[in-house]
Length: 135
Image (cartoon, rainbow, N blue to C red; front, side, top):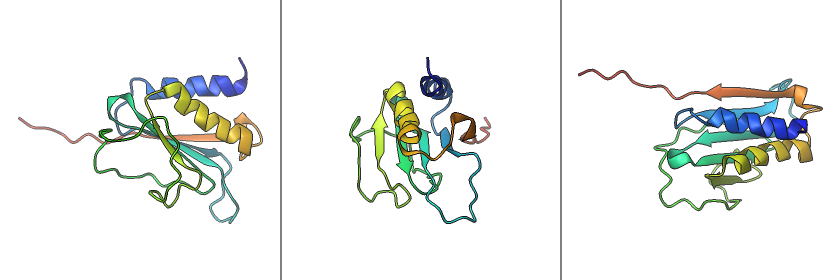
């Protein structure tokens, strides 16, 4: 198994068992926000019913605060290239296929650069907050 496939497997494992609302951000670990260069980024956002939103960009992606994580009415497994997200320069995808989602991210870095090697790929997780419930 090559390093890109291993990274895709790791991303799939990262999505399994984690709650709806999880966001995984990927980008160069040495990113300098003071430099005005293109920066290859990808983001996975876990939605309801096992669906993941994949976003790819040449600018830093914001962490979107969605009103809800419902997937009702979403078109799955089709790349969207509209202006829904102003920070998303290279499209987004909704899919229940975790391997497809992970490979869409790894292919983005492999084919478009952004990192010299996988050793320089940065990753951060953002878990949703849970409010305390009282009885």
